[in-house]
Length: 295
Image (cartoon, rainbow, N blue to C red; front, side, top):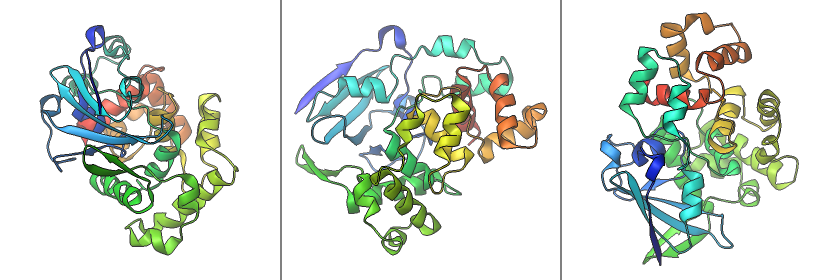
């Protein structure tokens, strides 16, 4: 076992619980079984676990908050992966300075100050958010855990067995019926067909990374089950498009109540108007705080 700690130094504050339990990522699990149970200052001392493919073999990473820093355990040297996945070098103070000085935004930052965007693997994020349509965060998380248990590679660590996220080739070989049995419902064929597209080389979400933002969003809608909102989630939480604003139910409610002038009658124009209102480059950061605060 390898262990380590991360002192954030000038990159404080950090809130692990808000970062991994805010509906951005469904690839972490809380070892005390209380994922999405209740909020707490800095996530208490709960351990969160994921299995990363950033190494030659899948590696388990366990991490918990220690004051404003982190403590981790893994069967690999996990520090660089954690710094990337949890965006530990983002300057939250500078990002907040770009946000509008209105009550809903500033109250959101105050309530969850320290929350970061995640930077998750693109394929895993693609499948996770295909599963997210009209679902509560706990159910989405449960679907991903079921996919891992059923189709993921087993990894032994510290006397326990963990499961990696399934590879595209594995999900492509499933059937709609099998995925429905895991609770995916009408999303089952979308997951199978999108995995097949990736496995067959018809496309990969990573190919959107170097495109201009709105072209990248359009590119991602080629995958089955991916509309503009899901595409924006993938761009924001996996491909480093910090300007992306997914227009989900909560954000549309915020537009209606607080930013009615941003409603332009269609997704692209409304997104563009809210992106400008939320400060441009880091508008997705602002959106994520507002989403978590209102939800």
